[in-house]
Amino acid sequence: MHKWLRFGRIYLICFLLFNTVFLAAQAKVGISGTIEWDNMQINAVISLDLASAGIKLPGGRTQGEAIIAAEYLRLIRPDILNIQVDSSSVIADIIDQGNWTFNAVENIALQADAVPPALSNDLKLLSASYSLGIASLSSSLIRHEHTADIPRTLSPVRTSAYTGIIIMAYDEQPVHGRKGSAFPKPCLFPKIWDTEMNLIFERNMLNPKAKYMVRYFHKGSIFSSGPSGLSKELSAVVGENPLKIFAQGVFGINPTDPIISREDTLRIISSAENRSLLREGRIAIILDNSMLKETLGN
Image 1 (cartoon, rainbow, N blue to C red):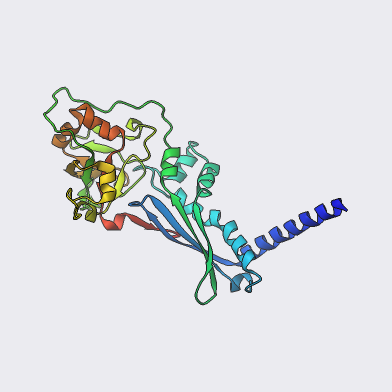
Image 2: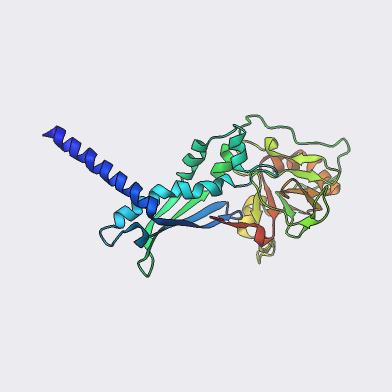
């Protein structure tokens, strides 16, 4: 008797799984949402057209939810693989180079916070929302255990002790080595160069325990009504007395790497306290609003 019950349960599970896969193959399931670099979040909505899957309510709702759950990875994967890691690579490139795996990407995708599916007002769509922090991607790509040295200078200048660094790069910037200009773009690990094209900061100089290498903000974050003129979110990253720098240009195959003046560079690298701001990721880059959000599913 127990064997038949066990067999019956297995048969039912297999039937439901097969039926879900069959319906998913003919269903219209889509993804919408954005990659929000200012919030370091991927916010996605997976929507199922119930009629295309032959699902009728209320009895078919559970099956609709199963289709959405089954299709989530397939739909979110291309957008994650296309996230810019540095000026020359997206995550798909890192995998192609053998430095990461599809399984690792999918395991991170499955860590998303999910909101249970809800019906549209016209009862035609069933949609579920997913939110995934970009920090989980960047922390997984930090492999070094020992921090590389941040450049120093043989001719230090007098400088203040700052609580963080703000690089204002919200305008179009001249692209080093090319004609023309471009709005700087966000990525997980931007490098910082000076106007003499000395490398000032890169991923291996970051404390591996730091959550982010840099944070991105919009222009309004530096024109807040508070005493410091900074938004609360920006102050949480750079403190109340940050060094404010205007970018002098941008560099990279994709324009992700800000260039700062040699004078500003010396103000950073002339003291151990200010060099530690780089190492701890207390850096904010202010970008044009149009650069801070990417549409999913394109």
